[in-house]
Figure (tube, rainbow, N blue to C red):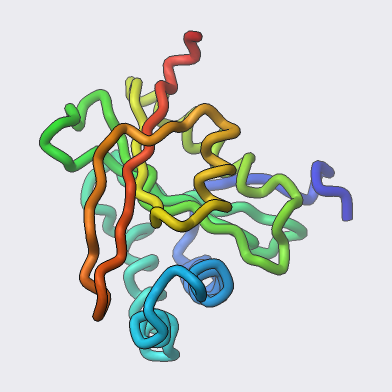
Length: 185
């Protein structure tokens, strides 16, 4: 299957996609975060019970989003959900939620990586947010997640100097990245 053929694309998620989105999330976390998160925390957030809870959260994200600007997009290949991106208004006090948004998550199934799905999801997210009048996009990444940081860095993202530490049984540091999506230089 060609990575850029007519059988691949990005579309708004549907209720029926929620289980596939949860499956992609769990598979991706198990692989991508295995060296970044404490074992017990990773086991907890990727357990069968957690997968079911994630599925319900993704159903809610599609059927009852917290705001009209919260959206879930899916990457598809041959009608199979192979990745997803969720975004909403930026919630930190140092950003105006009218002009700043947060890329809450962007994950591509490890079985379908390196086929352009992440880039398509990111481009579709930016296009959607530009239509909403957003000028700045932020996201949080684990400090040691070199893959995500390199991917976003190649698309013009950079750390903005803000960091936070999550308690996942032991401290796990995240850094905030940002980019200007106005299309200007």
